[in-house]
Length: 118
Length: 112
Image 1 (cartoon, rainbow over the protein chains, first blue to last red):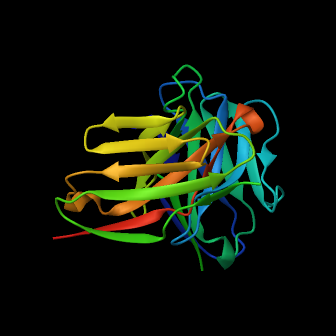
Image 2: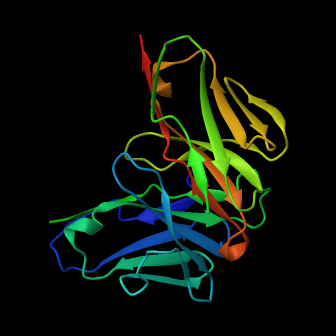
């Protein structure tokens, strides 16, 4: 069964709206969570690495003031897309690292959130 | 920097064998992963190589040559459900101890 739950699975909203996406690890404590973005027919691009209790580390070119990441507990990380615009429309996927598992499956992925900004 | 190359698309016949290649140049290497991704869904783990050689798992095998910066995923006895994108990803040091860098993916179409 799923070990990482991502919610919502789909969002359609107006330009200027802020959207929050949740990523929960269900049966393990995730000290590290990752947020990816995937445009159509493109690969997953890492946006940021989120460590519990500290500030997220953003990849080059990702605006930290636009994509707010909070990892306040060992089982929950949130990504808020602030003042979303049509160019932010994409497939957002989170993953969580289970520190107790062997390295051959270091990340468990959520099911993704399809964000469409009108 | 990180650079991972895979063919964009491939087509193969049901029941056949297909090999998807991946070459990489990365700063740091701690292993290579293959994921399967169906359209609109999250990736699912297929295989992991950290040492040179072949790892076999049922119909799927993955090979790694670290000196050549090269890997391939071999799919045998292809089934229609194998039509998907296959992503090569390299594990390397990053924030939170490591990160995965993905290739653009190879879209495989299996035809009758």
